[in-house]
Structures are given as C-alpha cells and as structure tokens.
Length: 609
Image (cartoon, rainbow, N blue to C red):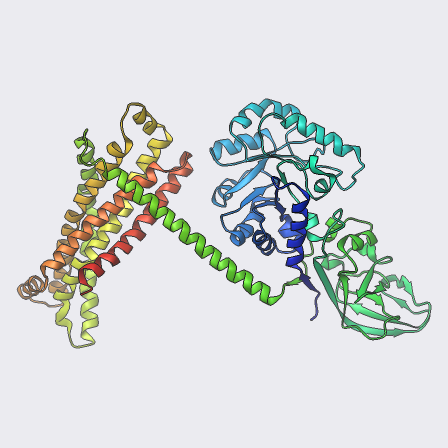
C-alpha cells in the first residue's frame, strides 16, 4: 500500500462516550459532537456507533454536515447545528429536522419568520466572544424566547481544559445569571466542562474531543492507529545527511527509512526535529525535514526492517503528537486525508443494522400515517347523517370535481384508447391475431385504464386543488374562524368534497370508458381498416356486467381516495407558503400511490377467481 492506513476503533469511541456519560448524573443527557465530519473520522459511521450505545443528541457545526449523520442514524435522534440558522439553510433545517442553535437577534428573526413552530435552541455568550447573544441582546428577547420554549439554551467554556483558570467560574456565574429561574433546558459543558464537576453539567453535556481520545480526557481509550508504509531503507555512513537542507547528519553509521507521508497529508513540518514514529512499542525519531509526501526516520536501533511505522497508536496519542509539533490535538485530528479502514465485519454489521433500522422506521411511519388517515376518514364520514347539511358546498365540490374534470379526462381517455388500439394491432400481428383489437381495447379500458387514468387525473387536478385551498385557509386562520363560529371543519369542508368525489368518480369513469373505447374505434376504423359495425359488435359482446361493475366501483373508490387525501393534507398542513407547498406535493403523491394500491386490491377481489 502506497498511502497511510488509518484504523478507527469504533468500540473505543463508544466506550469513551459511556465513560463521559457516567461522570454526570442520571438525569443529565450526554450528547455527542460529530462536527468536522466526526473530527475527520467519518461522522456518519461514528454517529451510528454512538447511537447504538445510547446517544440520541448530536451536534454538527453547519447544516450541510447533518445530511450524512441523519442518513446514518435515522429520524429518531436530534441533530443540533452550532452555527444556527444561516441564510440559505431554511429548507435543509426543515427537511432534515435540525435544531439550529440561534446565536443572534438576526438569526432568531430569520428562524421565526421562515420556520414558525420549528424547534430551535439559543446560544449565549458568557465571555468567550465567539458565538452567542450577549447579555443585553438576551435581555431584549428573553421573554419572547422563553414563551416559545426553546429546545436548549447553551454556552461554551473558553478555558475548560485549564481547571484552575478563574474564567471557568466567571462564565458559570454569568450563565446562571442569564438563565436561572426560567425553566429552560441548559447546556454549558463540553469534554473539559464535564471534567470540571457536576455544577457545570446542567441538563445536557456535549463531549467532543474526548470521544476521540483527546485531552483533557486523560482516561480516554485510544481510538486511532495511523500506519505509514516504508517505501525505502538506506544505510548511511557517519557524516551523511538526510532530506532538504541536510538538516540531519548521521553521527555514526545509520539506517534511514523513508515513509509515505508529509505535509501535503496534513502532518506539520514542525515535527521535523522533535517528532517520533513507532514500531510496536519502540520509538523511532524523525530524521530531517518533513517534506511534501516523504519523511525520513532513524531506525538504526531496530533489529529488523519494518514494513510500516505508526505515527498514531496506543504509544503515541494525538495530544503527544501535537505536543511534538508545539500545537494542540484539535489541529492533528482532522486527518480525513488518509484512507480509513474499519474492521470489515463491523462495517458489514453496521450497514445491515442501518438498513434494517431504516426499514423498520419506514414501516412504523407508514402504519402510523395509515392509522391517522383512517381516523380522519372515520371522523369525516361520521357527520354524514347528522345535520346541518351544506348542499351549496356539496354542489360546488361536485362541479369542481366532476364537470370541470371532463375535458382533461376526455382527452386523456381518447388518446389512450387510440394508442392502445395501435399497440394491440402491432403486437397481435406478431401472432397472426390482429382482429382482437376491439375486445382487448374494451376490456383494457373498462377494467384498468379508464378507472386508473381518471383516478390519477383527479389526483393531479382535484387533490392538489383541495389541499392548496384548505391549507391556505388554515394558514390564513379561516379555519380557526369557522371553529369560533361553532362550525365543524370536517363537516363543512371535508365531508362535502369527499361525498362529491365518491359520486363523481363513477360518472367520470363512465365518460372515460366511452371516450377511450371510441378512441380505439376511431383509430381502428380510420387507419387500421376495421369494419365499424363489426368493431362495435365485438366490443359490446365481449364486455360483461362484472367488468362494468368493477370499473364503477374503482371510480367511486378512487374519487374517495383523491378527495380524502386533499382534505387530510390540507387540514394538517404546516405554516407559511412552504407548508402549503409541501402539503400539496405530499397529497398528490399519497393519492397516486393509494389509488394504484387500491386498484390492485380491487382487481384481485373482482377477478382473482
């Protein structure tokens, strides 16, 4: 292998989380910070491992980082965004169900205007002067924010890795002064803060670097091994030099191994004079300067020639390597420049578990949604025989669903019947049976294409219209006004539309069947040479009462589904223009899928024998 090999101990990361979790009290929740792609170690994989041991809250730096994490852990966990609600993040925050940690009045305004009702958190600046509202800004908006019940209020310690630093106590007191007495869920401690003691823990802790074996968590399990392959070994005589500038001179005969890594890979040049790599438990000093992709290492004292040397292992942690570079472990951590290998079996198990978890979550969501729809339908139809009745609403709905749908239904049916005749004639000719066109066009249109096309056309035209209308009424509080006037929305808005759909569906199907058969007749007699009288006779003689009954039953069912979905999504839409648009899109998709599923079920019921 010509490049370094980084092995990540996912169990070690999980164990570090467990240890940090036990330091705080049982009522304190322990989150996990997976920003910067999990400190360069693959945020999705790490989040999945931590989720399996109990982590349910994750923090990322920016909304864009959350996509991979959400895909790995599913929807049953919370993802918070440190950078808050940035311009352009609205759709992603909504779609990925993120909680932005709002850090300014501008972000608070943006969030409340674009995503009203969506959860959010607040960041306060207690002295670090990096992110968060200062005391004067917080005082101006505090009462409003408290009334909206933020998911979390947090701040960040500047000197938590220095336990004796007085800044820690000052920030703690400022945080208490800003948040005490308001019943807010609070968080102040990251890894260093957890180690400062219980008074810094509040309701949620946010370990980050400690999960990955970094200071100040001295009891952490090492979680990385970074092996660098040896490309070549040289035998030197005393006085020979190594690398650019001849900065290292052999004091005696020496052996120098050249390993495949350098500053292009993220290793700092400052380790040139003080850095070491390891062969098992034996340290080997770096010889000469770190260059772009090569490093010289003195292996004179080794008894054998190594194939690879470790720069990170149980014998040299990220903080020890950082110390040799006169920096901190955070600067060493983002090492996504190397090919990451986790144990294959663990990876396969994780992938399988993730797939099963996603399938299970999908089935739960699907059954839950179907249950809500059934309850909605039951509630709507329960008003069928109870006054008052609203004939004006019913006839208006019947006009919109039935009469105004005739043009699109007629055109669709005509061209479908004509195309079907051409296809059957072409296919039948291969088997010397082109004369079956009238019979197959008739049964194809009446049994399947007529009802299904009507259902899909109603879904496209009527479902979307009903959803948009009712959702707009909800957004503009017209439905609230109806309730205030003691008018039941289900009876006044949903029931007339649903009944109109049930009655209009069979009529539209009858029209579609007739026009579709005529379309086939027109094409067959005008272009394929069929005798008109024989064509009509074959069509009439081939259709049976069950064909007609099944077609009309499908029409009524599809009309019910299309109007029910429009009412359900319209009355349950989110706020704002985005909520209306999302509800409209979802209603058409749900109606189309349910119509096709119902078509299959009804076909089995009518024709399985």
